[in-house]
Length: 297
Image 1 (cartoon, one colour):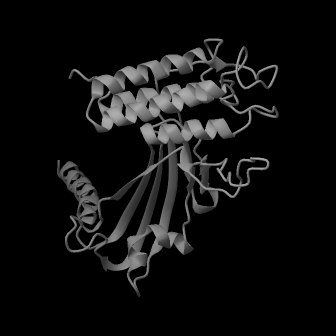
Image 2 (image 1 turned 120 degrees about the vertical axis):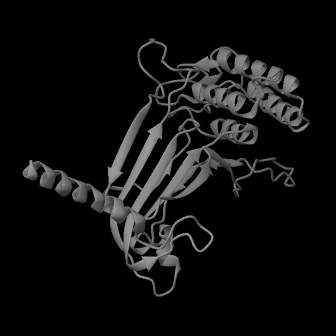
Image 3 (image 1 turned 180 degrees about the vertical axis):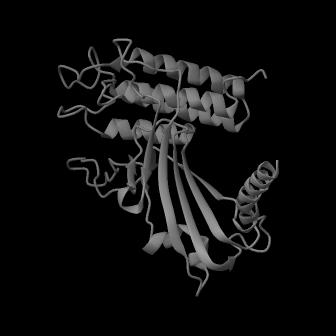
């Protein structure tokens, strides 16, 4: 019986050590930052007006979004201790986790089996193994990139200052989350980007129907105006029309002829260039997150 009591006491003390140590370890400092698949851009490339030299309309007004992470020495740019002169720190572990969520719209390719934007998780650990450059053009909304940094300090350090909830501690966790977002303005930028980029090696852009492109941009501008004026019913109706127009324009192969409109033109929707499905998924996200999709509620 005495042996059992001693064993229980030993186990109690063993499990009590992490609990006591937890009092000098901070809870994670969380930073959430929105990122977008396309960004407004300027360029010296302009349209040509022949003899009319006053035409200087830029032909590039959107660029692919990129998540670029600049760590600094020993991740100094992402560690609170590094912002305090004279404070030293030691990196214990670094991980980056990319999570692509599930979605409803355009889930599978034309064969009904191959997922276009499959739900998946990518995990990287250790500074040399972490990618710091991520193109975002085809990342669907709510995709997250979570950078978690575990570091220690030789002295008790208050990583969130006197007003934060963390007490001074020796062990600290920084968590930086980049969340892929979309809204009506971002969707307009993405549509513009798809109008600029080529469909593979062909002469036509990913959005090859010129009148369709103009109409879709007009619909997005009209939906934005209605949404700004709190007219959710009108905004919902416009986005429903936008969805139908995009859905009807999906093409799996580049047009046979580079005509500005007509049979064969539309919006690229191949496995390598799923621009059409990307637009539909973004509209689905906007309807769900802005309240436009449920104007009566």
